[in-house]
Image 1 (cartoon, protein in one colour):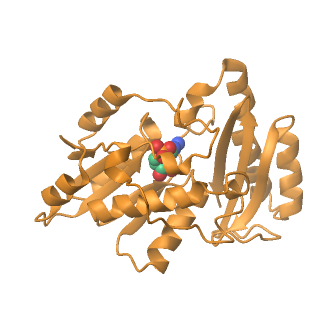
Image 2 (cartoon, rainbow, N blue to C red):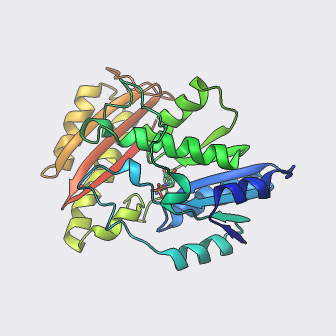
Image 3 (cartoon, rainbow, N blue to C red):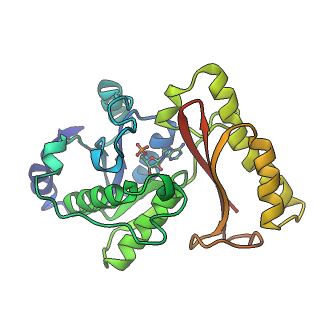
Amino acid sequence: MKIISNPVELKEYLKYKKESIGFVPTMGALHEGHISLIKKAKEENELVIVSIFLNPTQFLKGEDLDKYPKKDDADKHICKLSGVDVLFFPHSYDIYGDDEVSLSAPNVRGYVLEGTSRPSHFNGVLTVVMKLLNIVNPTRAYFGKKDAQQLNLISLMIKQLFMSTLIVPVDTVRENDGLALSSRNVYLSSSERKDALKISASLHSAGIMVSKNILDSKEIIKKMREVLSPLEIFYVEILNRDFEQISHVEIGNTVILVEAKAGTTRLLDNIWL
Ligand code: AMP
């Protein structure tokens, strides 16, 4: 496995490659969720490139940038074992200069859900993903459905900026008890982890209601809020795949999303129906 930190060097290395390239951008502290993205990229492409970059511009002041888990050696080992061809491991100064050009998230879709309480978050996400895609120029890029709003905005960026990378959504990997894997789960104490299970349980209860043909969004959200109680809830939303609110679940075109706090940790989860 080749490890490259300089974007120009990576571009030079890839310049004459004719193979299809699968790209998996991450912020490190890799877990089985990330590994499933890498596996899918391996299945569908001749070369696989993973980036590990803790992107400062997507963190707001006072968020967890400084304490975000760092596991550089373990991450390198996981990438090697997973058959990654190139690990792109830049420093912040490799990616950002001083007086920066940057992207803005769309005024509506970028400022709902997570964008409500983290207003500049998606500007940072879109800017870094744009930079990474321009450096790697992959055939396909792999993103988790767990970060559904991020996936939606990146797909929108690809379409609206006429970019040619194919975005591949990947299913959420969970612990056996339902908790969605996240690098931030290490922040949870054992009692907070128990609380956090209410998030996947609320989505499970929504799934059961839908299987009984109860499709009314208000009714489902009411039940989910009961299951989530007493967690601090940021949102429970039932949206179509264009991220518009819908009064009834439409099978094949619905995402149910939750963000809630366990202890001091904000956790996201969702199901796609
Ligand atoms: P992160 O390192 O948190 O920025 O995540 C890198 C990529 O992994 C993003 O596309 C995430 O959506 C995806 N990801 C994170 N957690 C999971 C999970 N539990 N299952 C599948 N993909 C995930």
